[in-house]
Length: 115
Image 1 (cartoon, rainbow, N blue to C red):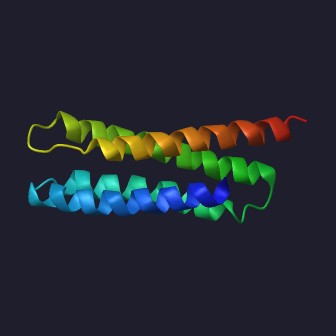
Image 2: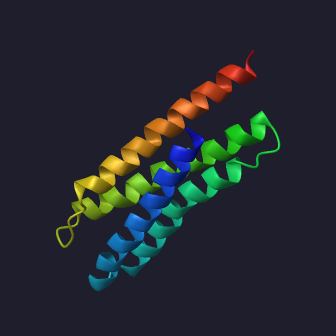
C-alpha cells in the first residue's frame, strides 16, 4: 500500500503543477501557489513517513498528509466556484483516492498502536 500511495501522491502533485499553469494564465497566482504547496506537501509527508522513527511518528506524518489533502480540496473547490476556470473531475477523483488510502492507513496504524 505504501508504494501505491507514494506513486499516487507524486502523480497527483505533477497533475496539480500542470493545472496551476492554467491558473497562472488566468492571473490566479496566489491560489496557484497555495495549491501547489498543499498538493505537493501531501506526497512529501508520505515520502517522509517511510523513514518514520516510530509508529507514532508514522501516524503523525500521515495525519499531516491528510490535513494537506483537506487544504488542497479547499483550494480546488474554490477554483471550481470561479467561473473563469474549470477543474477537471479527474483531479477531484485522484484526490479522493489519496484521501481514502490515507484514511485507511491511519486507521490501520491506530489499531496497531492500541494493541
